[in-house]
Amino acid sequence: MDNNELQVLVQSISDEHFGKPFKHTALFNRRLKTTGGRYLLSSHNIEINPQQHEYFGDEALVEIIKHELCHYHLHLEGKGYKHRDNDFKELSQEVGAPRHCKAVQSYDERANYIYECKDCEIEFKRIRSVNTKKYRCGRCGGKLILKLKLT
Image (cartoon, rainbow, N blue to C red):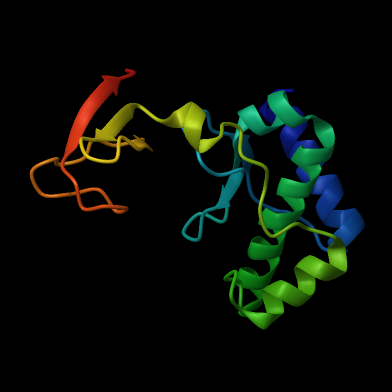
Protein backbone atom coordinates (compact mmCIF):
# COMPACT_ATOMS: atom_id res chain seq x y z
CA MET A 1 0.00 0.00 0.00
CA ASP A 2 1.33 3.44 -0.90
CA ASN A 3 0.44 6.95 0.31
CA ASN A 4 -2.23 7.44 -2.38
CA GLU A 5 -4.05 4.27 -1.39
CA LEU A 6 -3.75 5.27 2.27
CA GLN A 7 -5.28 8.68 1.49
CA VAL A 8 -8.26 7.04 -0.23
CA LEU A 9 -8.69 4.58 2.67
CA VAL A 10 -8.63 7.36 5.29
CA GLN A 11 -11.17 9.40 3.33
CA SER A 12 -13.52 6.42 2.96
CA ILE A 13 -13.26 5.50 6.67
CA SER A 14 -13.94 9.12 7.62
CA ASP A 15 -17.04 9.25 5.43
CA GLU A 16 -18.32 5.84 6.47
CA HIS A 17 -17.73 5.88 10.25
CA PHE A 18 -17.77 9.59 11.08
CA GLY A 19 -20.07 10.96 8.38
CA LYS A 20 -17.59 13.79 7.78
CA PRO A 21 -14.97 14.36 5.09
CA PHE A 22 -11.22 14.12 5.69
CA LYS A 23 -9.82 17.17 3.89
CA HIS A 24 -6.12 16.89 4.73
CA THR A 25 -3.24 14.53 3.98
CA ALA A 26 -2.65 11.01 5.25
CA LEU A 27 0.74 9.40 4.72
CA PHE A 28 3.07 6.70 5.95
CA ASN A 29 6.00 7.76 8.14
CA ARG A 30 8.76 5.18 8.54
CA ARG A 31 10.30 7.19 11.39
CA LEU A 32 7.43 6.27 13.72
CA LYS A 33 8.62 3.42 15.92
CA THR A 34 6.66 3.28 19.16
CA THR A 35 3.24 4.46 17.98
CA GLY A 36 0.75 3.27 15.40
CA GLY A 37 0.07 6.74 14.07
CA ARG A 38 -0.23 10.38 14.96
CA TYR A 39 -2.44 13.35 14.25
CA LEU A 40 -0.52 16.58 13.69
CA LEU A 41 -2.29 19.53 15.33
CA SER A 42 -0.60 22.21 13.24
CA SER A 43 -1.17 20.78 9.76
CA HIS A 44 -4.14 18.47 10.55
CA ASN A 45 -2.37 15.68 8.68
CA ILE A 46 -2.30 12.07 9.83
CA GLU A 47 0.85 9.95 9.80
CA ILE A 48 0.72 6.16 10.03
CA ASN A 49 3.46 3.72 11.03
CA PRO A 50 3.80 1.37 8.01
CA GLN A 51 5.21 -1.40 10.22
CA GLN A 52 1.79 -1.78 11.84
CA HIS A 53 0.33 -2.64 8.43
CA GLU A 54 3.22 -4.98 7.59
CA TYR A 55 3.04 -6.87 10.91
CA PHE A 56 -0.68 -6.90 11.69
CA GLY A 57 -2.46 -6.32 8.36
CA ASP A 58 -5.40 -4.31 7.11
CA GLU A 59 -7.57 -4.67 10.22
CA ALA A 60 -4.95 -3.07 12.49
CA LEU A 61 -4.44 -0.30 9.94
CA VAL A 62 -8.17 0.51 9.91
CA GLU A 63 -8.25 0.62 13.74
CA ILE A 64 -5.30 3.03 13.85
CA ILE A 65 -6.91 5.25 11.22
CA LYS A 66 -10.17 5.35 13.22
CA HIS A 67 -8.21 6.34 16.33
CA GLU A 68 -6.38 9.16 14.55
CA LEU A 69 -9.60 10.34 12.89
CA CYS A 70 -11.14 10.70 16.37
CA HIS A 71 -8.35 13.14 17.24
CA TYR A 72 -8.78 14.88 13.87
CA HIS A 73 -12.53 15.46 13.92
CA LEU A 74 -12.72 16.41 17.60
CA HIS A 75 -9.85 18.90 17.26
CA LEU A 76 -11.43 20.56 14.23
CA GLU A 77 -14.76 20.81 16.10
CA GLY A 78 -13.10 22.41 19.13
CA LYS A 79 -13.97 19.49 21.42
CA GLY A 80 -11.74 17.44 23.72
CA TYR A 81 -9.40 15.57 21.39
CA LYS A 82 -6.88 14.24 23.94
CA HIS A 83 -6.90 10.65 25.20
CA ARG A 84 -8.08 11.71 28.66
CA ASP A 85 -11.04 13.79 27.42
CA ASN A 86 -14.57 12.37 27.66
CA ASP A 87 -15.38 13.54 24.12
CA PHE A 88 -12.51 11.44 22.81
CA LYS A 89 -13.44 8.39 24.89
CA GLU A 90 -17.07 8.55 23.78
CA LEU A 91 -16.29 8.98 20.08
CA SER A 92 -13.68 6.21 20.17
CA GLN A 93 -16.19 3.82 21.68
CA GLU A 94 -18.88 4.89 19.22
CA VAL A 95 -16.77 4.17 16.12
CA GLY A 96 -14.91 1.17 17.57
CA ALA A 97 -11.47 2.78 17.67
CA PRO A 98 -9.02 1.17 20.12
CA ARG A 99 -7.23 3.16 22.82
CA HIS A 100 -3.84 1.63 21.93
CA CYS A 101 -2.32 -0.40 19.12
CA LYS A 102 -0.26 -3.57 19.39
CA ALA A 103 3.48 -3.17 19.86
CA VAL A 104 5.54 -4.14 16.82
CA GLN A 105 8.41 -5.22 19.07
CA SER A 106 8.31 -6.23 22.72
CA TYR A 107 10.49 -4.49 25.30
CA ASP A 108 12.84 -7.50 25.32
CA GLU A 109 13.29 -7.28 21.55
CA ARG A 110 14.03 -3.55 21.76
CA ALA A 111 16.48 -3.88 24.68
CA ASN A 112 20.06 -2.87 23.84
CA TYR A 113 21.74 -3.40 27.20
CA ILE A 114 21.71 -6.14 29.81
CA TYR A 115 22.86 -5.23 33.32
CA GLU A 116 23.45 -7.62 36.18
CA CYS A 117 23.51 -7.06 39.93
CA LYS A 118 26.79 -8.18 41.50
CA ASP A 119 25.06 -9.34 44.68
CA CYS A 120 21.79 -11.06 43.72
CA GLU A 121 22.75 -11.70 40.06
CA ILE A 122 19.37 -10.56 38.69
CA GLU A 123 19.44 -9.29 35.10
CA PHE A 124 17.95 -6.00 33.93
CA LYS A 125 17.21 -5.38 30.25
CA ARG A 126 17.24 -1.73 29.21
CA ILE A 127 16.76 0.12 25.94
CA ARG A 128 19.00 3.00 27.02
CA SER A 129 22.27 2.83 28.89
CA VAL A 130 22.24 3.21 32.67
CA ASN A 131 24.77 5.16 34.74
CA THR A 132 26.06 2.30 36.91
CA LYS A 133 27.78 4.73 39.29
CA LYS A 134 24.48 6.44 40.06
CA TYR A 135 21.91 3.60 39.95
CA ARG A 136 21.78 0.40 42.04
CA CYS A 137 19.80 -2.81 42.01
CA GLY A 138 16.14 -2.24 42.83
CA ARG A 139 15.84 -5.57 44.56
CA CYS A 140 18.84 -5.66 46.93
CA GLY A 141 20.66 -2.34 46.44
CA GLY A 142 23.73 -4.03 44.98
CA LYS A 143 26.11 -2.59 42.39
CA LEU A 144 25.13 -2.97 38.71
CA ILE A 145 27.55 -4.05 35.99
CA LEU A 146 27.09 -4.03 32.23
CA LYS A 147 26.84 -7.68 31.24
CA LEU A 148 26.10 -7.32 27.52
CA LYS A 149 25.68 -4.57 24.94
CA LEU A 150 23.45 -5.81 22.12
CA THR A 151 23.83 -2.96 19.63
